[in-house]
Length: 80
Image 1 (tube, rainbow, N blue to C red):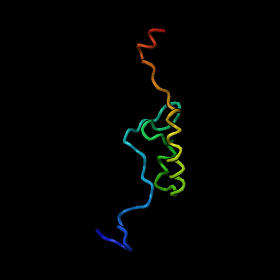
Image 2: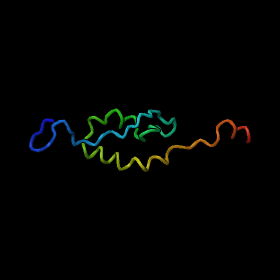
Image 3: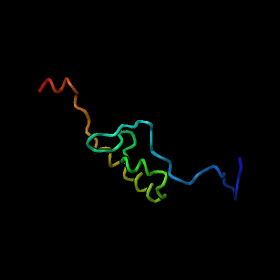
Image 4: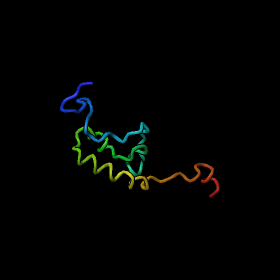
């Protein structure tokens, strides 16, 4: 381990990506169903500032409600 001023130089202070490798974009909400980020946020993540990343991370829990849950699929449609 290489240290500089008592800190591991390989460790980054950046906020890590919230990606959980479930990369499916919801067709209506236009956000990833795994991490809740928009396509634009995903593609620009590595270039975002620490404060911009923190703002995205703070908003992610609010986005879960944007995704419509399935209500039974084909079986539910046939009952209508």
